[in-house]
Image (cartoon, rainbow, N blue to C red):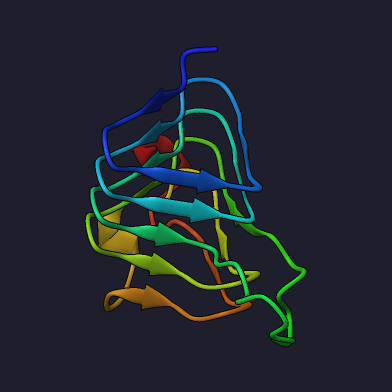
Length: 111
């Protein structure tokens, strides 16, 4: 309930929990998004291997924690994990590499 998928967004083989938002032209593939996760416009979470292609880790799901937000154009790799309450200032660069984990840098009273 409450999930919003904006025009041009693509969702494949994924689970989106309550109140998630996938902004326009974003792609979510083989991913699990916890409550109130938000994917910015043109961002990408996870990936699907091409037919017949055996990619290491391709069977792993990418994960976004509760209340996390990735900014427009950001890429979350295969099997990568964005922890709960992560915001753009917690991220470095424009990609979270395959299998990596990022957690919020804020203290509990700041969340």
